[in-house]
Image 1 (spheres, rainbow, N blue to C red):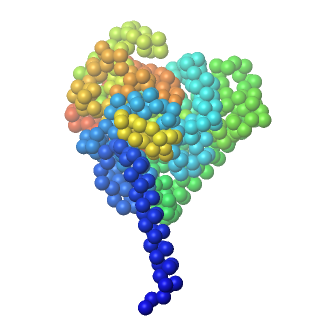
Image 2: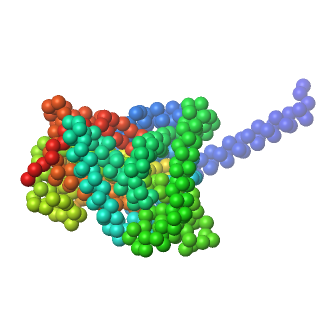
Image 3: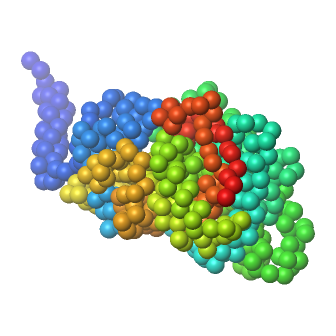
Length: 507
């Protein structure tokens, strides 16, 4: 027979297990079940990452069409809510903007932008509030945007002259390349004080920016599955990040030192001529002893402003730049007639003319509707448990707003795949953050503070292009043949360059 003392330990263990099981079941019963957003089935370890595909905004639109306007996914161990309707976007970015104002910690921006010390990727908090205030009040206020009016006029006129020269030497003009150069030149003068195309550095600088933007759109698997972070070292991502970060740091260090050495603030004798580096150095001097605006903060702000304006202006803002007008000859003709009628016999367009060009503004709105520069916007993160559209959202959940899908929602837009600027002529809908049907620049606390600057360059460039030139596709191609394929990353842009024949217009 088994001795009694041999039964004591197993008996007490069994009793202890029964008690724990009872407590667990009682606790589970007393905890209300969460009402989570609908979700497709996920795979072990990777979750739903395999469902993103090559064009995540398109894949997520398909999933949302099947599961609903608010969708719960898991990227590795990270819960991700995808909002694909104007109502869901309004609830997140307006009604609960404060709760969803944080940015998730991402390793790539951390490595490229000085620990995410910029205004776009910095976590929500006192540092971000102060940096955004500097951007809004010091760098990108309406007064400051107007102070750079001369720069916009000079550089858009230089663009027109460049196209004329290219037309004489070669019948075909790469319009995308021309617009990228324009944007680089405008933003370099405004932010850094001089153009880099004048010093043989243009190609190198553009290559830096292209790789920088590509890397910002890359995915680090370690952000979602930490124990697989070593893959970034093996596939070369870490090495590319280190190289680009080092190159930009060296470049910006030289720029800042040049500004400090020549003491340009005192020499120009006028606030209107200050560039962004001057303004930030001046603010740094005024707040001496504070750690807010250190040199690395200046570099981070300049880097993100430079890259974001290049994305917004050169790649998508203008109907001419993205090629949509060529697929719609009627649109091009209406646009040219409007611009030329408003300008009349004057040789040059100034920004006062733009206020009368309603169709031009409609073309830009429609271009931004169909070609959101950042289709999923920059990710947000919830700071506390909350409810959205009746669903429970836990603190720490990542949030993606599919601005691209919202702009193609057939319940909001008639024939959403068609390029029809006329839809905006009798509509109050704009892209500045008040109308959630069209949010290419985001909205709320984390919306882009540089919309006015971006639009000012874009409108003037488009007006001058259609005023000065008649455009056609090379080799007798028709607009219907134009290839509109896109390539993706953080941004979406044309896969193939826009090649045109530009003939000077004579009155």
